[in-house]
Amino acid sequence: MPPRDLIYARLGYRRGKTKVDDRQKEEIERAIEQAQSFMELKGAAKRIRIEKITSSEVVLAQGITFDSRQLSSMLKDSNEALLMAATAGNRIMQAIKVESDSGNLTRAVILDAVASETTDKVLDWISSFYKQELVRQGLNLTSRRYSAGYGDLDLKHQKTIYDTLGLNRLGVKITDSYILIPEKSVTAIAGIRQAA
Image 1 (cartoon, rainbow, N blue to C red):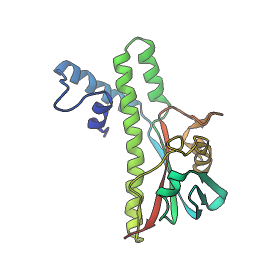
Image 2: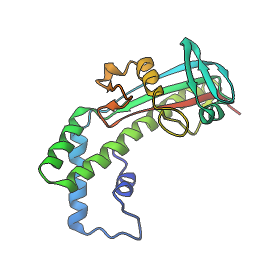
Image 3: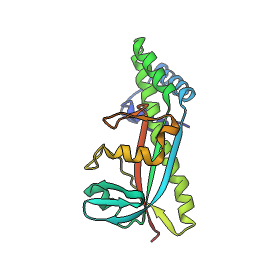
């Protein structure tokens, strides 16, 4: 189920401030349904033990190192990291291109918004799945997650997450500049810690 409130917000609609007439709403809803038919949602995740955290570096088992003060701060009370990724697949990107190339920019923008928000929701689903497992172990997941390319976590770390999760198995590729293809693919890191 696509997150309609988030999709509308991404499109610039604000409840109580922006008016959407019936024709516009019908067009948006049709595009949301169309987008769903093109998406091939997939995800991956892996728990990895944290070996060491300094003020500017997180060292995981398997020789994985992330240099980031902000990530170190977020994970400071964590014993493990949860690496996760999600993709909407290639078909939705092809549909967006077809709509854009044919001049139907409104529909292309709506499809893009649906793909972006739904891909983020896959990360939410992965987090929720792990939270259920973790609570039975007396653990919990950090409420925040952190992605390569945000804050001071260099985008180059996307390659580490890509390789660790084997994202090629999901049909995701990574460029020499660490961009994931298809475009609607995301990675994130969360912390696993003892429940309070």
